[in-house]
Image (cartoon, rainbow, N blue to C red; front, side, top):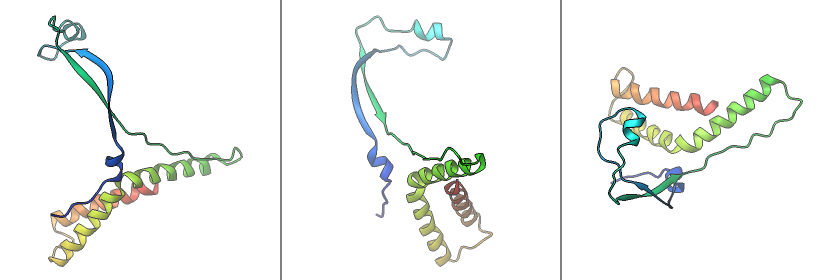
Length: 128
């Protein structure tokens, strides 16, 4: 079985916060007061775990840049971040397109067109 890796998924850290929250009884969705009042009086608690990943891009801009140029640079930074996240998926979709062409699927085939549209969307976002 073939699989590909998502680098960002491997960077997600999970840690126990050390906090415990009261176990809530099962109630239907209601107002905040109803939900708050649903805390079980028993001594049942859940451990709390936090799952997080830090993403960020520093974009260094000269203070004398025009607003248009500054916004363009910021948008390119956004595109680079999105490419880091979705780049492996784009690579896999490209391979799917190659396989589809080898099997005789071309424009006009719904599956081919959907994958092609996904690739175009990713490409647009990567540009910023």
